[in-house]
Image (cartoon, rainbow, N blue to C red; front, side):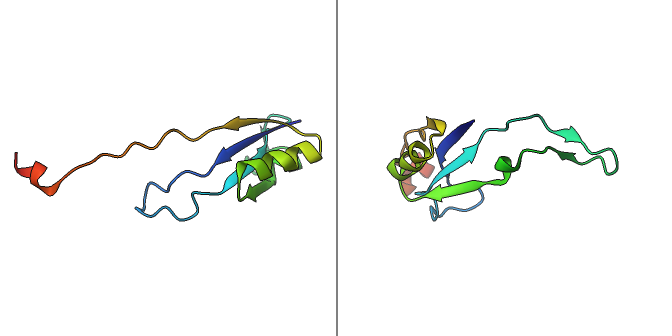
Length: 92
């Protein structure tokens, strides 16, 4: 069983950065999803897919995964690029 650790990205619909400092640990799916014959909804018997743990730091998430013997891979966030712009640039 493996897990995926990543940092929550900024919401594209808002300009604020609230909640972007948390790290998330999600389990990789153990089996493929299949349609339910009655409703047609996709589902599987893997209950770990529903588990989503949040941590204040990457080290805390990695320590938790190590403590329960879970293999994991970390996706680091892309570097932040500042686009320095002045109001006067609109009139050049």
